Amino acid sequence: MNLKKYIKKISIVALFALTVSPSFGQDLLARQAPVDRRMRALDTLALRSIEIKENRENPAAQLYEDFNNQYAHRATSLPSHYRIDLRHFCMPTPSRVVTSNFGARWGRQHKGLDIKVYIGDTIRAAFDGKVRVVRYEGRGYGKYIVIRHNNGLETIYGHLSKQLVSENEEVRSGDVIGLGGNTGRSTGSHLHFETRLCGVALNPALFFDFRNQDVTGDFYNFDLATYERDSAEATRVRGKIGNGGYTRDMIYGEVGQSANRGSSTSGELLYHKVKPGETLTSIAKKRGVSVEQIVRLSNLGKNPQIHVGQILRYS
Ligand SMILES: [Zn+2]
Image (cartoon, rainbow, N blue to C red; front, top):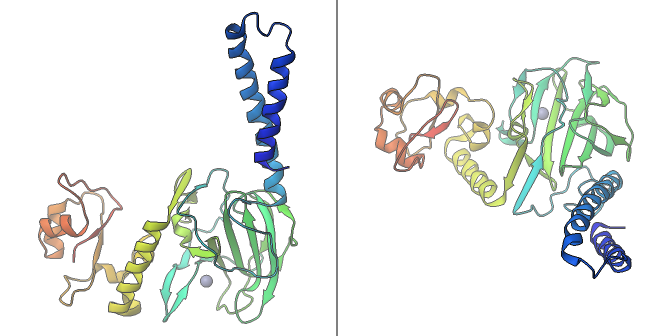
């Protein structure tokens, strides 16, 4: 039974309960409130248990048409807005070492983060969900696992030495799903970790901070317009300054060396990450540009305020 049907049914039951109540009609107003409250409590509980059951059978059913094991990832249409619940997460590995970021790499797109792990290291499910794909791809992911989570995200764990779950198996956040390895196209043991929404690879650094072993917040609000704007900008930046460039994708991850180059002379987009103690004036001086230029290019508005870690465009 799906949620909509259930709501309809519970309303009919509630109406019936009201109708047969012997005191109905005597003091309608006095009795209405507690009945409403009780109904709401009952609704919330019952709906929650239905939701849990539905998620168990088909995680994030509102985003995905089916639970298909045939393909590892196939981009479908992204929602215009979607709130991703990051609470109850588990870091897939306690390793804090990111060896490769999301984004352009050697002329191709790296669709995940590479985290240093050793062969045999424990790899855990990032959230509750259901294992969708367990497969081997010799020239790519190696032994890999795709999990669809109740929060709508799908996570991919690649180059494993051992897969410890099977397709359609339910997992809880933190369950051991495999062991770290060096299978597939990989030089040196590491975990290739992807986060996808509707098949589209999003930078895992938007959700996970491996260095601090934490999520970026309780929720992540996905916004399609922002995503499209950032992707277009990343493509434009890559097109202009090649792989050494500082892309929007990388901004969300580690700050690369290329961000620390001098002022642009060729119309390149250049960025500065705010460090403790810095002011707009000190940044402008360091970068050899005016404060006004940073304010304008970074859209800081009439009352500019900056904070540590903020990414400013200065050229
Ligand atoms: Zn990788």
